[in-house]
Image (cartoon, rainbow over all chains, first blue to last red; front, side):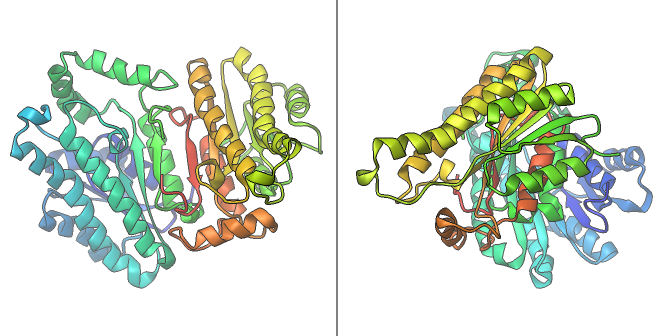
Length: 259
Length: 218
């Protein structure tokens, strides 16, 4: 297991959930990884549980502002001298509501957390990748980056924008040996889904279990998305063998998205 | 220890050149492998399953496009041949694989397609129609057999370095409009095939998985 031997990776939003699974898969393939989250305590716990010694560092920072992104990407540059792989995983939404009732704050927070964080971290990482003519950027988007869903317009808009950024940026840096792709997972049963998913479900008059079952029904597999599968495709994209895949929006959703 | 230790796999290739690279990669990962020797896809998969003691993975590498010709001049025979060489082979291959996999309640099927499964190419309308048909087949059958533990995906391949021929000239020209500005390699396709072939992978199905360097915009 050495597909990422010697590589330095930054994974935002990686104390828990899919970011954490990606970070763990990268470590298992030989990468050094900067973990990130807003909570120092959850970060310490993640580092202890991953138990990979010097191969993992944690930065408590909020990537919904540029200074936070500078801290996270800066940690990799300062301690390991480079960023080979950036995974923009942080993102989410608050106070889901139909557009007719949605607050400005919901859209603003969602865009900062999801789109601006991706933009800032990408720009910071590219400053290191472009001169070295090498790099991998993986944006963890969503099924909602391809499809609409009621009550989640802010999130859907932010993820569609991430997908647009992915496609355009890929053309800009493709000749420099840098790939940019988005992963579009279906619903995954993560901690954040337990937190925000409950609210979205409630807005639709559903329990969390009913909401998850709805996602499962839409999938060809009749299952929600396995977090480990998203991590496995992230490894492929980050590896040498992934050099030929760029500008793509890759569904990992049990066959839910129609395109 | 390989990712595919204990996995039985059959690779059928209609002279696309991808089968060899995929077979090498799967074998290096520990798969117990059968390769075709020019047989038709369905009898080959049935025989491979018998020889290997069951079939966990079937890889069907479709062949290249026939000669370019404007649709206005395409004969019924040429139309039928192109549809059969692409969509017909995919159908018979997938059906034969399912015959082995559905009774066992598990399996992985991969079909290699080209960017013409999603894009136009003037002068190759029968091929493009057939490739689009393959994409539709993969998406639909994935929904039929997903609950029964069988995953079906297509690898959407860009121009492959080292391949020659009429179709590849057009595909090569298209790489200039992609992100990486070069053809793909058979090894890149094989790496993607390996990722999707893993028995641990359970959430990727009905997908037109991109290995085309950004030459397809959707």
